[in-house]
Structure formats: structure tokens, C-alpha cells
Image (cartoon, rainbow, N blue to C red; front, side, top):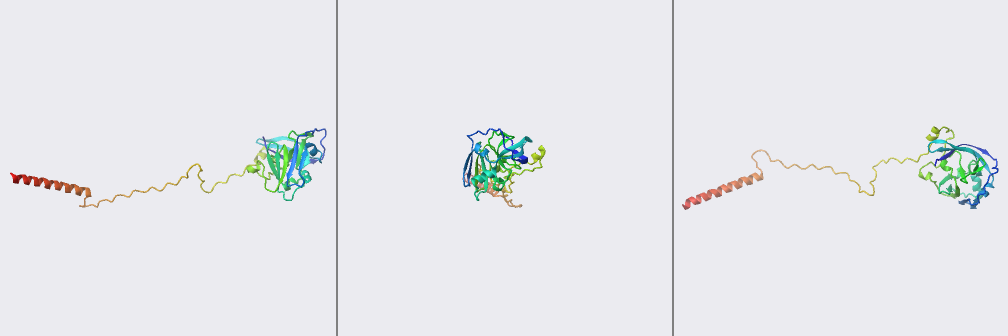
Length: 257
């Protein structure tokens, strides 16, 4: 599903004519930090003052191309929020879709006159019932199938915002070509390159650096000259002892003859 964004817009107060908004099952809940929580049907929203904005929806999937353009009709977001009564503690406006998609807007952004909850395009009801139209913002702010708006006092982040995409989601209004739009694609914040060696995996014991090889201590060399090794001395002594024993045996035999 391509990410959509607005690249141009305008204003009109032309009401939607001959449109069928009889969907009585759809409900929009406005809750959180509000004085008067709202539960509105589509008919309730359509009965509120209408605003029509011309805007293009551009897929930056890729490829980048204009998917559709026309006049989006709906109710100003801030008008709806004022109806509920915005608490001074509000930091973010969180949006929830029927399919579990989420996004968010800063309170000061939500006050813009060109941000609407659209229920029609070119006079025809939208299949997605309600779509947030946010000119100048990347398409991940254009949430459709909106069922819940919650005002919160913390830095709520939507689906893509929580994955590193810009929370401001500002797009250059001068981008026209597919190449220009592609160059503006939002990308998650890159993972910084670690300055130290990474920690070993928990499933593997750390690999210790091998100790430097110890060179064997050479055996002391016998000094040159007349000095003999201990083994040689023992051999000579044994030979001498044998010679003496043999000599004595011979002498004893001669005496006994």
C-alpha cells in the first residue's frame, strides 16, 4: 500500500450535493483530555460546517506518481476538537483507524484551518468513510477509516513515527517530478555505528582474546671443555666398576689354583 501525501491545496466552501451519507453504523469517538467526549455518527459530522480543500495524493511507494487529485470535503479537525473542549494539558492528538493503523499530530498542527476529516471527494462519499487530510505532510499522516481521536498529554507516536519516520512529516511543496518526490522519501533514523566492539550474543559465551604464546625456556647448555653430562659420568663409573669386579674375579681364581 503506497504512502500518500499532499503537494498542493486550496479552499472552497461549496457544500456536497446529492451525496448519500446514510452509514449509520460508523461512529467517531473523540476522547482523552477533553471536556465533553463525543460519539458522532457520520450524519452528525456531515451536519457540521463543511470545508472543501483541493489536494493531490501522491504515492511515494516507489514509484512516485499522482494517484488522485480533487476536492476533499469534510469538517475542520480543530472545529471538531473545539466542540469536545481541548484540555490545556494536551500535547498530542492521536488517531486510530478501524484497521488498527495509527498516526498523530502536534496540537499546534491540529489547529491549522486546512486540516480536515474528509468524508467526500469531488462530491462522492469516500469508501473509507473518514480520512484525515493533512496538506504538506507525508501520506502516513493521511490516516483513513478514522474511528477514534484521543487527546493525550505525552508524546504519542503513530505506526510509522514510532519506527523512526519524521514526526513532523513535512514535505517540500515544490516537489513535482517523480525523481524529486523520491529524493524526499522519509527514511528511518539510521542506526549509529558503534564506537566500541559490539557485545557478544547472549547465547554464546564471550570470546576472550588469546593470551600471547609463551616461548619455552631453553635448557641450559653444557659449558664447552672437559665438563661431561651427568648421564656420561654415570656410564663411565659403571664401566669402571665392572672392570674392577672382573679383575678381582680373575685374581681370586689364580690364587686358588
